[in-house]
Length: 145
Image (cartoon, rainbow, N blue to C red):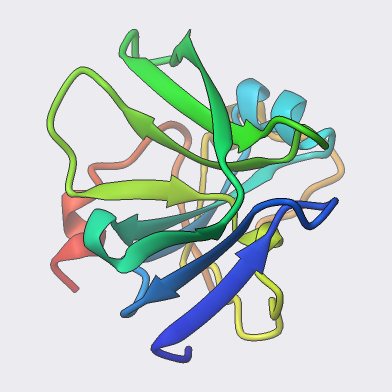
């Protein structure tokens, strides 16, 4: 992937830039990601906090409890409602979890894993070129590779 990526919400009010390489990209099949995306899964890309910058517009946010019991803060465009990213609140994280469908160019997206497969849609068949997890993996293994 490029070392600089740009994205925006659906209405174009919010624009952002990522400098540096993303840490990990996966498809999440948990029921919350299905609900948030309105689809069979959600895509998640970890990006270092220092590599993410809002170029134009501002985001609204809300908090919710994750399946793990931890609190997450979700950031979205207040005009069109498109989620841009979320982050965990219970512990200090050096990254945000970007919704990569908001990138202007998604052609290079290559997920490395499918997680929460125990709640996947029956029609989804995990591809052979990703790692498979019934729940949430220990993401440290992804960050070390």
